[in-house]
Length: 104
Image 1 (spheres, rainbow, N blue to C red):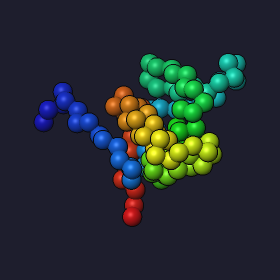
Image 2 (image 1 turned 30 degrees about the vertical axis):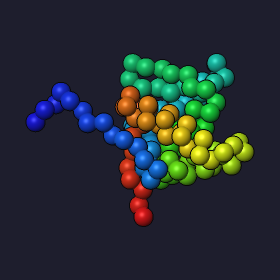
Image 3 (image 1 turned 180 degrees about the horizontal axis):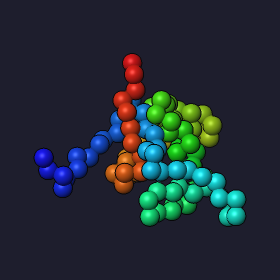
Image 4 (image 1 turned 90 degrees about the vertical axis):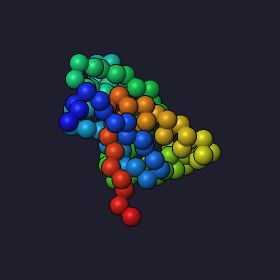
């Protein structure tokens, strides 16, 4: 078994993203902003990123997340979906988001 290579997970519209146990989204009261905590990392996501991450519960699909955000922000769903998928793919590639395939 080759432990040196990792196969890239490609997110799709029916992927249901979630934050793995080693990643936490927490509100920092001192700085009055959200932080993403991971081993040896602290990230300060912008408001839209926080909205996406808060919806990553392992049951909502990328398509549902984008649809909800498009409705909330009254934006074109196709554009929001492309942005959400790109964001989540980047975070997945960095091992900060995982995904399961949604049940039919």
